[in-house]
Amino acid sequence: MFSSETYFEILKIVASCSIFFVWFVRYDNIKKEFKEYGFPTWFRDFVGILKISSIAMLHSGNINIVKTGAATISVLMLGAVLTHIFLKDTFRNTIASVSMLIISITMISMI
Image (tube, rainbow, N blue to C red; front, side, top):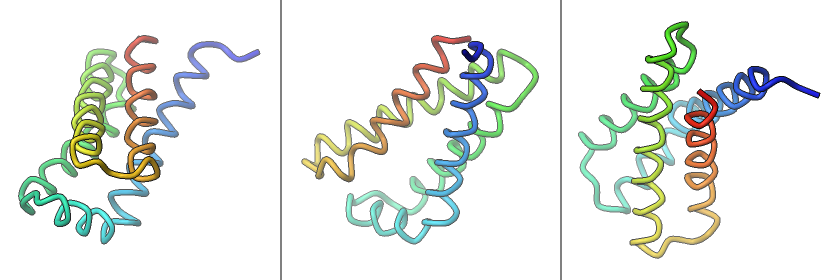
């Protein structure tokens, strides 16, 4: 039906739109969550910079940069999932990071 390149492009778009939406459109929610979890503002900003940089890397023509972007997202999402589990967060709050972790690992496996 679709080629693996098409699926990869779809995953890149989903990941990019999701991260963009959460870190720009719903940024007030991010500020609230990081504060509730006890993380400092510099850490929140650092994570945001890494995530936005990583989605930009996904759209590079250089496969090594794409791999770096997908790997960085995977590491960040693993950290998010572990944080949600450690803090006994609700499934509703955890599922987005689990989904993004699966998407980023899938992208790495497709490269």
